[in-house]
Length: 101
Image 1 (tube, rainbow, N blue to C red):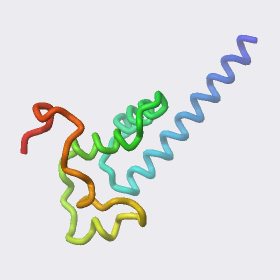
Image 2 (cartoon, rainbow, N blue to C red; image 1 turned 135 degrees about the vertical axis):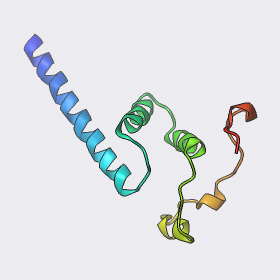
Image 3 (cartoon, one colour; image 1 turned 90 degrees about the vertical axis):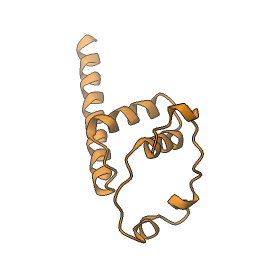
Image 4 (tube, one colour; image 1 turned 180 degrees about the vertical axis):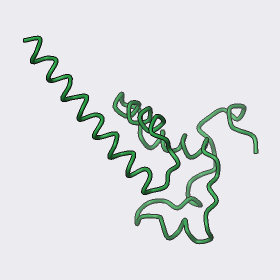
């Protein structure tokens, strides 16, 4: 019984590692700038029920601006996804918690 439980835990750990590896590869392809540790924390928060859209807004707000070529944002936006210009500038945080420009 205990051996079966250990095998199940080992299989779950392998699946989690494979999932994280795949998410990290996609993150690199999309050039998100997220390292593996940060990505694993974000995935863990989502697994615990945190709203992924709220997490994405936090990551965008606290990430340094990326040097993008002109018109690259419009070209990389998927249909139905708001462009960067459509995302409101208001913060979900109290103004004292926002990084100062």
